[in-house]
Length: 280
Image (cartoon, rainbow, N blue to C red):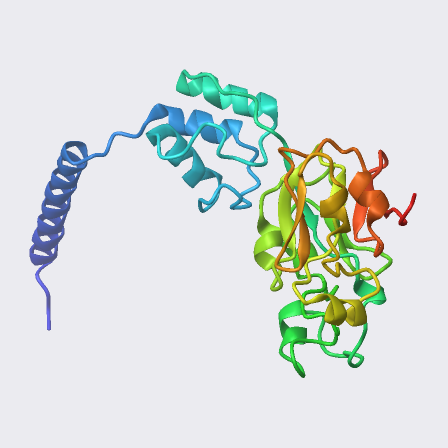
């Protein structure tokens, strides 16, 4: 069958005209319905560190920048930002920002190898997986750090590692308090504390004294000696474990010296958590 060349030409021309027409319509519609983008969003995003850690509660730095520009988030929403970066974002938004207290993550456990064992776990290195084996994991303490590194793998800043005792420990100088390690810990052992805090409670056990004593050699037994000897009413036993009120704590060390279980620790200048013996 012979096809008339003119037929093909007309078809091509028709498609070209239709394509051009639809293109013009789409271009016109894009101008009419275009959503104007706040020019500050890109500036704010450039001022953010680009870690995309999610510590701000948004899905990455781009979403955080959008939220700050729209007023849905404060200028200091990014936990990873340095003071200089936060001030730059505040300048873009035309506001002043008050200095924020630096906070870091802290693992409320010192047990690890000092905790009793029900059995030796030989499965995959995963805290959630270990907790599903034979009654909440291999440790006698149901609140202790399992030491399989879920928090380590979650940290984007290499700020947390398993120490020699088999317990996760935070490098305060690297920690940005983004919260990833807290979300990754299935036992909720990781909390946010002031960077300046130097008296810490290295236990999360809520077991009663006799049970806690038998589960771990460095567990809080709710004896309340810390509470009774604090001159500032800054430490109390809540749910069988000591809790410090850092708004009242003056770091006098009275509670540390009275703790018979070495649960209270001093944070020395070298950045390591070091237990202090009773009477020290």
